[in-house]
Image 1 (cartoon, rainbow, N blue to C red):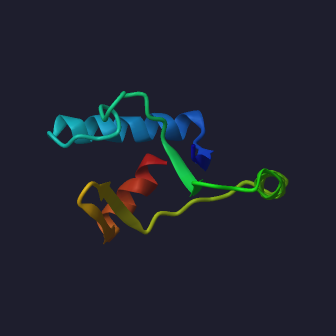
Image 2 (image 1 turned 90 degrees about the horizontal axis):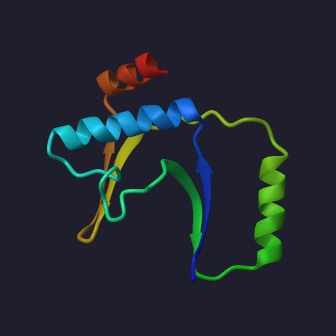
Image 3 (image 1 turned 90 degrees about the vertical axis):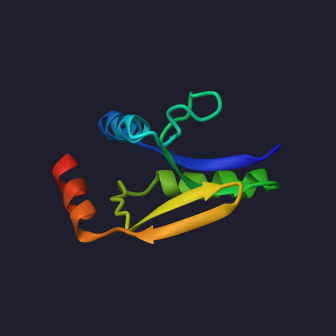
Amino acid sequence: MALAVCLLFDRQSERAIRALWDRIEQQGVPSLRSHTHGRHVPHVSYAVLRSWDQTAVTAALEEIAAGSPVELCFDGVGCFGAAGCGWWPVWVPISWRGRRAS
């Protein structure tokens, strides 16, 4: 079994991401809204581990939890699939939309 260490979004951000998934789906592009079981939760993965030292993972998470809130900035869009992955930089108009949505 694998272990994923993830950040979850606040309610407002999660709703915004789910709304984006809906808009993508309306354009005919599958998203995590409907992928597989359809119960995906918006998140950012710190790590996905096939094997791990529970003590080391716990210590790292305790250190992160003791820190200040984190501001996230996204400078690209990634796409992961069976054929591989792709990465595209965010263009200025997209980053402007992000500012309007926040």
